[in-house]
Image 1: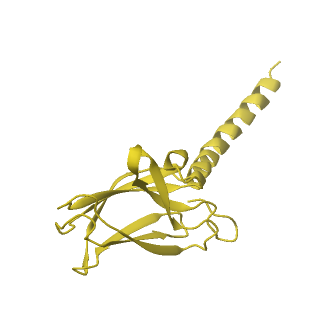
Image 2 (image 1 turned 30 degrees about the vertical axis):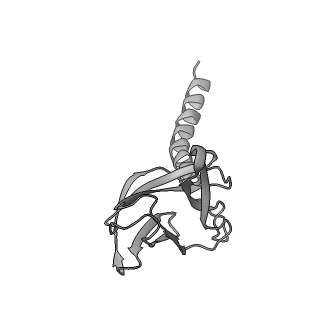
Image 3 (image 1 turned 90 degrees about the vertical axis):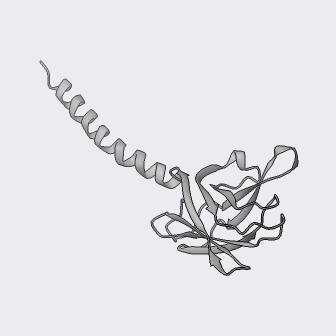
Length: 155
């Protein structure tokens, strides 16, 4: 997650929902410019009868079309009680800490029970990727400088 020097998020953090015609619309969870660390919750439900798990994709970016944002993690939420569609209320809490880590918790409200959250994939956020490139690039730049100095001192 990218944040500025005043410890605010630079990009909105959200999830996607599958809409009709296969379009993936975004649902904002933590707004851009929110202070970090930050934690927000939202209520989600099932789309099918007897659905016992759901997949939650977490993005950063400002587009309502999630395909235009940066996917930073996917989670599987398991252990939802089998019920009619739209009946279970799953409270999803997304947390961002000062080290740019995203954590997800899920709780079924009716049973007041925590659900199992399994991280399926993760990817660097824009900020983490920039820091990685900077850290890898500096040693290479120093090596290049030494090479230029070595070549320039050749007879």
